[in-house]
Image (tube, rainbow, N blue to C red; front, side, top):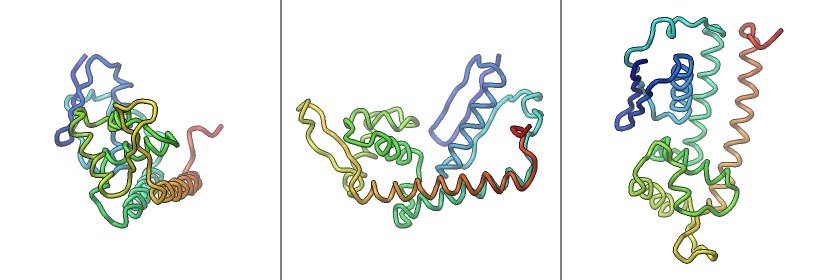
Length: 190
């Protein structure tokens, strides 16, 4: 088996000895996730097997474009959450804030650092957390159960903004699903 390398600036993911179908799926997920966040503009794949590239296409190009329109709209809405401030338009902030939103309550600071999966250094991850605290997006408090740790929660305003964001995102997915169905057959349909 060959070594596959996905690269985005300082992010390097090396994939060893993975079955070809899984390699392609990992690439598809990485590209979809990157497009959703908007920061992964280019992925390079080295030594991709020819038969992987030529897999049968399940959807037509009009359906693919509809998907991209939906993803672009979700990305634009993410920027609106931060009133146009594009510094929060990154995978790190997406992972951090959606992880804390998903927890739906206080999160230990050390756990929040692990939400940022593309960042391997706790020191670097803590810079994102500290910046979010400074901007009033996150609120830090003492942990009543462990004096050595801190707890993080989303500010009330940010939680409300993310609730509105996810409502709009789910609506976008539902509308895109209908539009994709109108643009051609779906392999899931009998």
